[in-house]
Length: 91
Image (tube, rainbow, N blue to C red; front, side):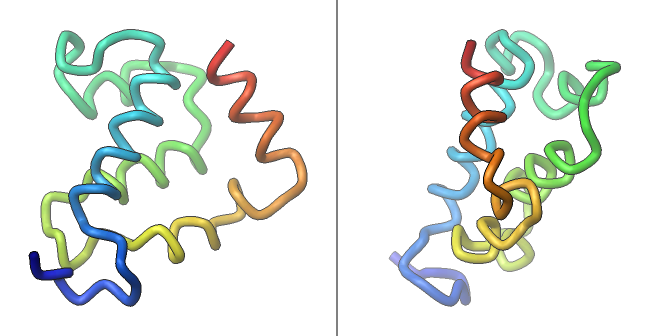
């Protein structure tokens, strides 16, 4: 399968799946029941940084979608409290 210009072995559909997983965890419900990305926009307390990450991972244009290496450069993933934030999302 073609990698759509991504700089590593991350396939665009894997990035999309990662974004859907983040959105499901963040929203706390099945996204397809909440009409996809609109679900994130309806969450009043959604932080700008996580909204940006999820929006980028769900980009329809696979060439514009970041690969995982690019995603992990976002500040949300780079600081030491990333694991704590992910734990809060899950619980």
